[in-house]
Length: 194
Figure (tube, helix red, strand yellow):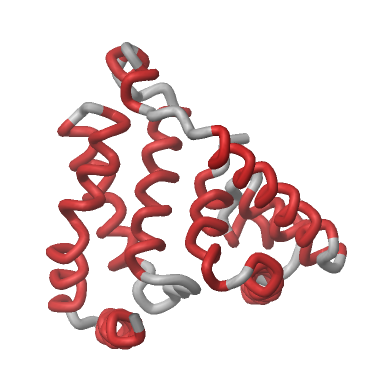
């Protein structure tokens, strides 16, 4: 696991140094997985390709400031899910998306649902224990899906201050939930519906 983490750190560093080969490596390593994940929901090849193209373009454009707290794979998977949900929310998804929706999502077992509820309670208690401004920034980011810039504007603080509050919040949540559940925690809150 450490080797993969080191490899990802090196890739991200090369990306920050404007090395296009790093973006190519990331693309070739993760594209198929991301495409499959988005296609399983949308069932629209063109839409999935557009979403992935936008994702990798966004990564390149933000390469200098990209701050990934978890694995690159988890970050990309979360980004794709968020973009798919945003695509659906905008109303641009085809009507077929809603046909037989129950066949595309497997129901969770009773045990998984209970674990999910327990995790939700644990997370909510941890968030409620954050300092006021930190909690507010966290909720705007994860629950209202606002960008760092939008949060900074709304709260009249700098983008760097927003980033610092989110770092503190995520560190606290990782401590409370534990490293084993970090990926699940981030996935849940990056993809959480309103």
